[in-house]
Amino acid sequence: MFFSTVYCSIVPPYLLRRLAAQREPELSRAARAAKEALQHVPGFQASRAVPGPGSRPGLRELKPSPPERTVYDAKSTEKLPGSVVRKEGEPPTGDPAADEAYDGLGHTHRLYAEAFGRNSIDGKGLHLDATVHYGRLYDNAFWDGQQMVFGDGDGQVFGRFTKSLSVIGHELTHGVTQYSAGLVYRNQAGALNESMSDVFGALVEQYVRKQSTAEASWLIGEGLFTDQVQGAALRSMKAPGTAYDDDVLGKDPQPDSMDGYVRTSADNGGVHINSGIPNRAFCLVATALGGNAWEAPAQIWYETLTGGTLSPTATFGAFAKATAASAKELFGADSKEHDAVRSAWETVKVKLPGARR
Image (cartoon, rainbow, N blue to C red; front, side, top):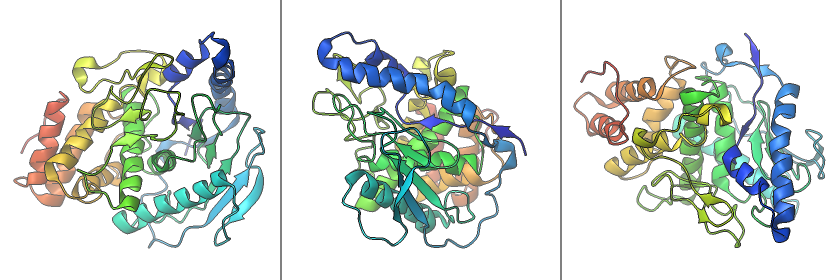
């Protein structure tokens, strides 16, 4: 086992930098909050160490057990975990953030248990902890390798981060990845890490709402923006690059295929911006197959993530090949599922290295 720092957040640094650069007096609070969120990352990473991807402790799973949730209140400080405000089985607190976090933890646990037979985030019944009211007007939510943490937002651009169920599912899925494939949070492997969280974050929302592929919005972070923002969400899986187009935040920069792949050293090699490519691939598979995305499409992605064969430094091409192999193993080489997977990766212009029918 080795150790690494883990800090996986929902709001990409490029968006926070855009907001932090604002000089208009009416946006001073939001700009200050964004600056503080950006400054927070390196210091936090240096203070938290967790088992690295080489440990892969979650490959042997037990029969799913009921969730064990604890919600804490940081009371606008950055001290974790904070004071306990709600434990498993206790009634609602009346604090929307605490109760949304509690419910979101439960919904995510339910998806993994019922759809995939997974026993919590680590496959071994890990207790689910979340802290709300983290920091002062904190503009982010993140998984730190041990628990979920939610800010309240600045109130001008971002509202509280517990409002979006896809955000809760997204961040907890970073834990699933940590305890399975251990995708390194850098370059294409990091973008795959982000994409897995978007995929299963969207699935949590769809599963709870009983939405079919056609009915789903495929938006990540819907409801986070205030009414002052011209945008629906942080990201669109169905149409990367269209989630927002705002005078302050700019236009959603995500590419929808390898033609627009962004080569950068920022954000750990573009882990947030390039996740739109594999996101769209999953959405294309789900759309081609129809029905419920948490069924065949998700089974293929889940098998790929947790099957034990995916390298922690996987490229898009390696991941595409692995999903095709999973589809073949689960449904057969001549199945519509296998064809849908291959077609999706071809559409987003990711080559399957050495793949054979």
